[in-house]
Image 1: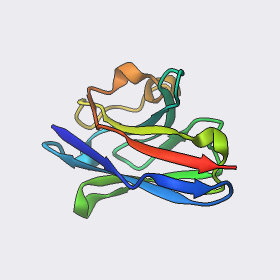
Image 2: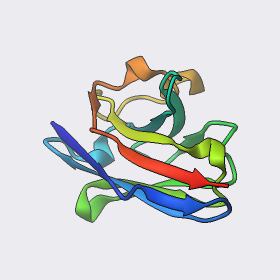
Image 3: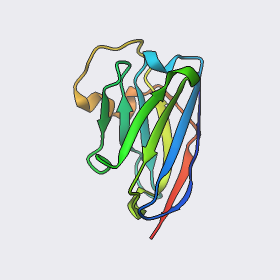
Image 4: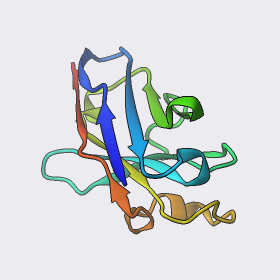
Length: 129
């Protein structure tokens, strides 16, 4: 299983970016896919996740600004980030939960790093003030 993240970059506060995660070895529509981020000196934190059925979950800090989606034809997961803030600066990682078509779980499951068995290499997002 390989996850390849891309699309990061430098943007001014208030701007938008979209990061993508291409998967190989698994079909993303059958698995929970998540985005996490890690700022310098901080732990990796949950950003968003999407279930096979399309239900999405977000950290409070990004709710209303970020949107997670799937492109089944390309076997990719995307994270559209709008109204970016300097505190969104981090390396963004995508993760895949190995469980095939998992049952619906408590929301804490999706935000737990331990849920995800595979990780991409990360893509840098920098938001200038």
